[in-house]
Length: 140
Image (cartoon, rainbow, N blue to C red; front, top):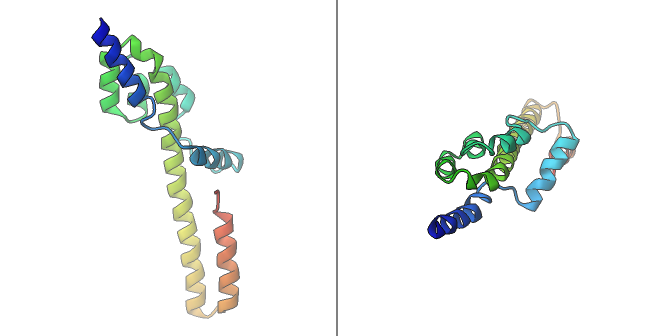
């Protein structure tokens, strides 16, 4: 029993923080949410609720290896897997949103480049418009 508790403690320390966002990313996440640009593919509350089931939170957060470990350590894993499910869902949403924002930014800059190429926009207008685009997509 003592070795099982030691294993559970080690696992909780390593799995609980496997997919957490750092403080800067959490601020960006909140800014995405505030600006209504957050893509919520996974519901963090659902991840937390599923974490009560054996390995459910980790499987939901696309962490199958951790899900198997948490499955084997259930019911002890119910202490940390809800956090893993919640944080993992947030990380998935954050990553997807960041990718979309980057694609959108690149698309707008590409369209701007096309305007310069066709002569619709001079270099001064280009610099101004590009700065506006960069500010639009800056969430730091």
